[in-house]
Structures are given as structure tokens and as C-alpha cells.
Length: 202
Ligand code: Z5A
Image (cartoon, rainbow, N blue to C red):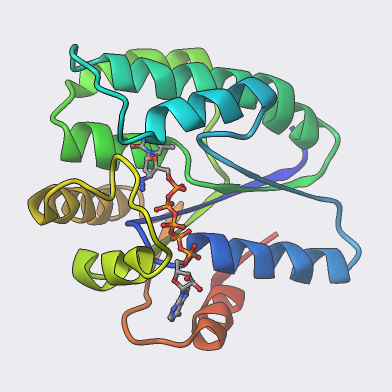
């Protein structure tokens, strides 16, 4: 595969969606072909899965149902959007990917890592580079709450959000060549973007 696959990660309200859009515009202004996508919800079927997964009315009884829904979304996304774009030499920018599963389902929910490792063999694709926007869950959730109704994850207790931030930082420490942590606490949108441009490589 000749393209570049860059993912953005972080807790709710860390600014991923804002920054990834700025980066897409920046790359396009340089004449690159860019695919801007997200998980869950990067395909037609994924959009339906996303609505189901985020709906506060969705009640899942078995612990692993949630993770299977994310992998149904991911498999369709990787096979029909990400891999074809990379094969065509494009830059793929993805808002959340496998590190979100590690943070939310392993760190947050306590899913057995062996299950995720097995599911990852179906996906067989890791990002070229990952940017982790780090912020305290309290600050991130305050931003998210300012937008209105909270989704199924945003409604979780603060301890859940603290666990997934801890897991994110652990994953970053274990993958220093791929993941760069950018502290965004109290920084303006412009200041964060400047930090991103300093470390992005294509
Ligand atoms: N999930 C999972 O559990 N397992 C998985 O494998 C995957 C996902 C792939 C997807 O929701 C949910 O699925 C997610 C994890 C779970 N949990 N939740 N909720 P999502 O992707 O839609 O949710 P999100 O990633 O948390 O999106 P978000 O809340 O929109 O956060 P964000 O994209 O990081 O932030 P933003 O939209 O760019 O900014 C949020 C607000 O802050 C907005 O009003 C901005 O204008 C403002 N903002 C942004 N930057 C700044 C700065 N620097 N200063 C001040 N204000 C700012």
C-alpha cells in the first residue's frame, strides 16, 4: 500500500474532529488526495451501526456485543474505504480507529485483550501515524456537553473516562514510534494545529 494512514485519537471533546478537518484542508491545499473518514460510521452500513451504538436507548446485555458492533463497522470500513484509498496512494485521515477500542472497550469496559487481538487479525491494518490529543476528561466532557444531548459513552461516569485516558497514555507509551501525544489542555484550536503540523509526516 503506498498511501499514508493517519488516525486521531482522544477522549470526548479533545478536539479530534476539529483538528482532522483542518489537517485535511491543509493537505488538500498542498495538492494531495485526501480521504477524511471516521469510526464508527465511515460507510453506509457503518452510519446505521453508529446510530445504534451511540443511542442512549441502546441496552446491550452481553459484554462483547459492543465490541462486535465496532468490528462489524471497522471491517466494512477498512475493506471498502481505507484499503482502496491507500492502494490508490491517497492520504487517509481517520477520526478514531483501533486505539479507541483499546481505550474504551479494554480500558473502559474491561474486555479481554485476547478478543481484540483476535478481531484485529481480521482487520490486518495499523495506521502509519497516530496523533493522541490528551485532555482531562472533565475538560473534554465540558466541551462535549456544551453541544447538547450526550451519547451512550458521554453519559458514563467520570471514572470510566479516567480509565480510558489512562489506557490511551499506556498505549502511546507502548507505541512511541507510531503515536505522538499532544497535550491540548487550555490550548486554542490554532495552537493545537501548530503542534500537529510540527510532528506530522507524509
Ligand atoms: N468508540 C469506542 O468505544 N470504540 C471504538 O472502537 C470506537 C469508538 C471507534 C464515537 O463517538 C464514540 O464511540 C466515542 C468512542 C466510541 N465516544 N463517545 N462519545 P464520536 O467519535 O462521535 O465522539 P467523539 O470522538 O468523542 O467526538 P467529539 O465529542 O465530537 O469530540 P472531538 O471530536 O474530540 O472534539 P471536537 O468535536 O473537535 O470538539 C468538541 C467541542 O470542543 C466543539 O464544540 C469544538 O468547537 C470545541 N473545541 C475543539 N477544540 C477546542 C479548543 N482547542 N479549545 C476550545 N474548544 C475546542
